[in-house]
Length: 153
Image (cartoon, rainbow, N blue to C red; front, top):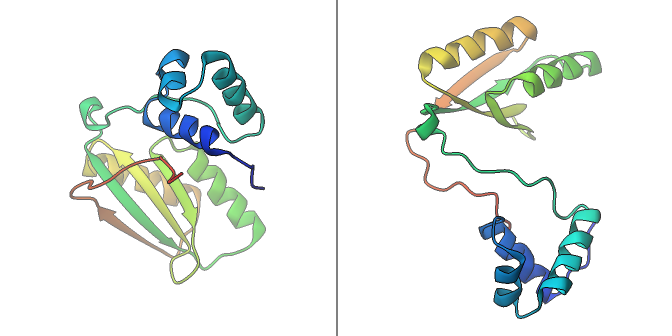
């Protein structure tokens, strides 16, 4: 479902994507409005589901999570029971930052953030002990070139 946004809504969303900790006064000034209308628009955007929970972006390397793996998973099982078990296992693993079901030769891709290769192996062993998979390929990211959650408004 798509929500209708005008130019001011888009400017507000762009500002929030840039820095959600800005004050209402700062946002209002940047979008050419006053504080109360900006607050009302933000409230409506939250109520409509356009704006989700606000979080803080942490620096993984500063916290010791220096290894990022992209895990490609192929399965020979496609039954509902297997999928539920797999999804539960993936959702419960805090190391998994993203999980996507794919079209094509690979069934799933996971973005896994851990301290090092040894920690990845612990994650991997736990995952395959919980759910049967046909093939797993882990790709170590050597360098993060771009990472954003911002949408091109």
